[in-house]
Amino acid sequence: MRPLPAAVASRLAGVLADPAGVPLPVFNSLLSALAASHAHLPLHLFRRFILPRRRPDAFTLSALTSSLPSSASAAAAADALHAFALRLGLLHADPVLANSLLRLYLRPPARPGLARRLFDEMPARTASSYNTLITRLHSRLPGSADEGVWGLARRMAEDGCAPDRFTVSAVLPACASARRGRELHCYAVRAGMCGADDFHVSSGLVSMYCRVGRPDLAHAVLDGMEWRNVVSWTAMVGGYTENGMFEGAVDAFRAMWLIDGILPNTVALISVLSAVEALSAIPGGKQVHGFAVRMAMYGEVSLSNALIDTYAKCGALHYARRVFDDTSWCKDVISWGAMILGYGIHGMGVEAVAFFDQMLASGVKPDSIVGLAVLSACCRAGLVLKGLNIYNSIVKDHGVQPTEEMCACIVDLLGRSGHVDHALDFVKSMSLEPGPSVWGALLDASITHSNKEIQDLASKSLLRLGEGKPSDLVAVSNVNASSERWNLVERVRSTINQGPLKKKTGRSWVNSNIG
Image 1 (cartoon, rainbow, N blue to C red):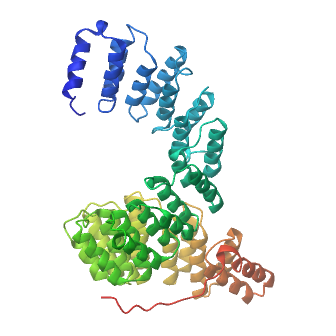
Image 2 (cartoon, one colour):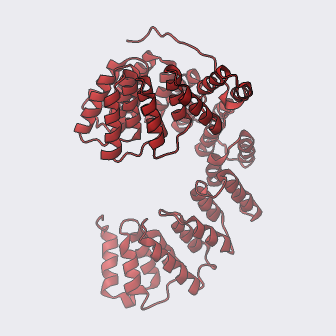
Image 3 (tube, rainbow, N blue to C red):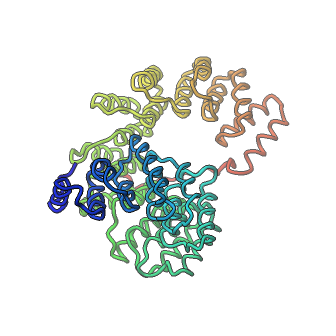
């Protein structure tokens, strides 16, 4: 708890010396001053000095709602304030108090049902009421968040409350299609929300268009902005990366500071590193690394983790290790996991296991991502016993819940070593329902070791699930073709050749700039 400012402490001393002679507005201003830094004190003063002597007004209760902490214990106090406001007839007469209670119900631990009921019962809803509900509830609304947020925005217009910049900025993340986004974009332009000094709406439009797969429209918005800032440029860099336009992401990153003279922040550096990684462009990674060092950004944990991941996946594992061994920044579980994954994808299973043991010795608790990385490394290197021991250890000793991918690694590990029956026993003993990756790994193992019975079981399970990697479904087709079950072959082939499961053409890329 921070010490009271001198002016507030002096006012509080005067109130405590003669509480009966202090006017209610003085009490109210004191409660507001204490709300930000001394959460429990306003409620204590209210119960001891105001409630026994005078009738509180709407401002008093609004100040109290702002002071309540975000905790389960505050829920009872919130309910009491709500009931008290109803009994005094203040709730329906004062929209500010109603909005304060609305925000209170939406703070953690949120109670969206009560918030929505209070909102529906408000006789006079303001733009602030709608903005509060849209901003806080769009991720918690039942059913489609997109439909829920858009329904509130339409109801807001019907109530005569014109959506403002806050409304548009809150609704943009809920746009699930370019059509909805363009509709909101048109409204923002007509309402004059895309001016030279308005970064929030324009940056939100850039992010929205990238998210719905229209980076061309996002770039058009960016080009139309009279003044661009780091948020809008970073949204464009990240949007290009998310849409697989990696060279565009690198070009946008360069344009940010070469053309507009805007210094990229850590988020921008991490976004462009994802594009560099996809391009396997070691020189680009070195340039970002050097830029971070020159601008004193190096040493931030998330950026260092991104550098490790980029170097490792681009084939420069020695650079990744140098970043990790730098003692100027503190490593977390993601840092260790990135290095373990790097060793694993380079076939250095023994080194990955040793690094995992070093992580445990340093006191870092593994999670499911680290578990998957080290199990994948064991699988690639054929370390069967070590992989099984690690799986049992992270599940039993460290309390990590096994994921489908972790279980698929164990099935693959046993299957590659010829223990197909043990792999099937493991599948039967799994605590979660086996998914496509597990059955696909079992199918590969059964085909490799010519186990016809398990082949049929795995292929039938994949057909029953109706999903999986295209390569797994091709294997299912081949298994059924060898048994002359042509109706099933036709069914699998039609599934592969339509929708998202259509098999992509294989490609290879040789980069001579590693080192």
